Image 1 (cartoon, helix red, strand yellow):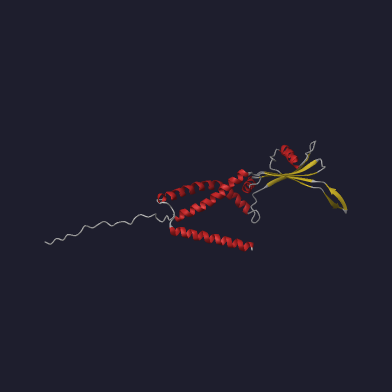
Image 2: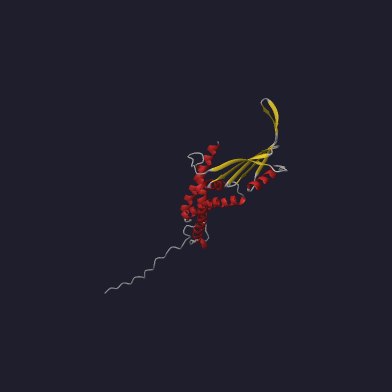
Length: 235
């Protein structure tokens, strides 16, 4: 009986592990730690964006239809009154704004007050001296106030308006009558959208070379399209 001896079969050797296509990451992040951090960042920023997005999205629809295909939702009830001035009368527009704020129970710290100098005008072929005009404007998301005072009068004419809920939402969207804090808060939403776009793109690519190249080409083409479109419009 013939017996043949064969050398033992060695197990196939596996190729050494690579970075899995993560071309620009250090080895300590090559096992998905960076992608995990991206997912968490994307999720938390998305949650914050969803909270503010409800406000800005709904009010943005109303603003988008303010000229064409109007949505008759925002309303501002207006009334006009005349207020007798106290003695002594306010010395300048700022003093007038402060007095109106106390009288009408309205915050006038950020009121816009201006004074138009008197001038000579022609009325019925007669030249007369027109007195100086004081104009004071105050706006906040819910209320507005416009006051006009001609120097020498014993009263000031005031227009007041109070908006409904939809008017308040659109004014919040535009930042009407709001300070720096609200502007910075709205900036967090805009910044969040930018971060969501970048992190979402990176999550889609999974940091692999081919997908990164495709994303780069897509974003580059989009940027060039927008650039040339703006050049065409501006030219």
